[in-house]
Picture 1 (cartoon, rainbow, N blue to C red):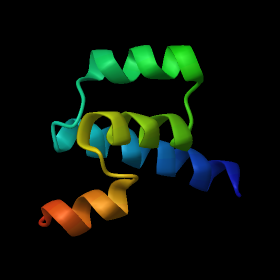
Picture 2 (picture 1 turned 180 degrees about the horizontal axis):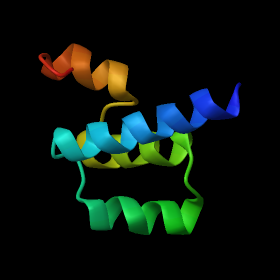
Picture 3 (picture 1 turned 45 degrees about the vertical axis):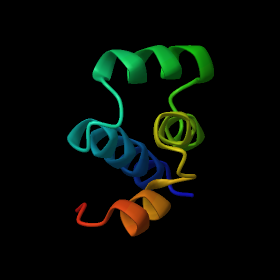
Picture 4 (picture 1 turned 135 degrees about the vertical axis):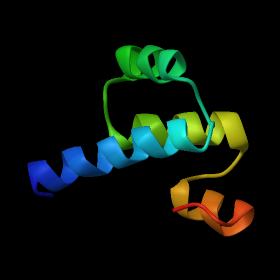
Length: 66
């Protein structure tokens, strides 16, 4: 994957968590410090906080997100 696209995806996922109040910034910082700033880490946060596997499933089940 192109590094710019990969970074944009991670940034999108980070903002998605904040915008949808899935996790606080402090929680995201802690998770990414422990596991690394990656798409998988942020998807793990989404799973732990919501029970959904990823953003797509969250939007499908909760509706209305960007």
